[in-house]
Every structure is written in structure tokens, then in C-alpha cells.
Amino acid sequence: MSATPDTCPNQLQVNTNGAWKNVMTFGHGEEAMERVKQAAQALHEVSPGTAWRITTTHNNSPTVLAHLGKSTYDLWITRPYG
Image (cartoon, rainbow, N blue to C red):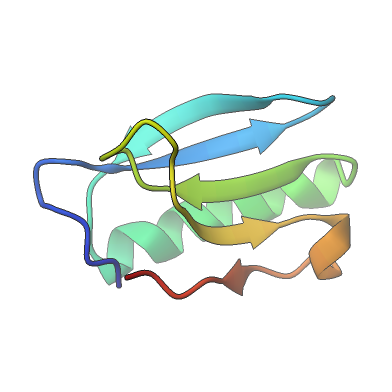
């Protein structure tokens, strides 16, 4: 799904109150991305005030690949990369 280098994994981040925090780093691939999205969706459902995003890790300012939160009507929105 992402065009990032294989040496730079993606990150799941959460925002609970003003700042993004790293939750975990995970590998590339559609299956890994979908499993992480499902897990974050379950956490979001029990704590709907949180926002979640998946980012790249290959530069100083991460590129957002997908986002979930109130502003997305509690659905994952995938952003094009590249």
C-alpha cells in the first residue's frame, strides 16, 4: 500500500489530548496495515475521544498514510502517498 522504503517501517500513533504519541512500529504490507487498523478501530470504539493515525518513519516529519477519529466520522481515511 505504501511506497516507503522497506528499511523504514510504518508507525501507529494515538492522540489522546493534543500530542501524537507512538504506539508501535510495524512492517509493510497490506495484511499488516489491515490488522493494525482493525486493532486501532477496536480501541477507538471503547475510547471514542482518541484519534489514530498510521505514518511513515522515513523522514523527520512523518507522512500520514491513514487517519481515524471524530473528524473522519469514526472511519479510517486513507491518504494517497507519493
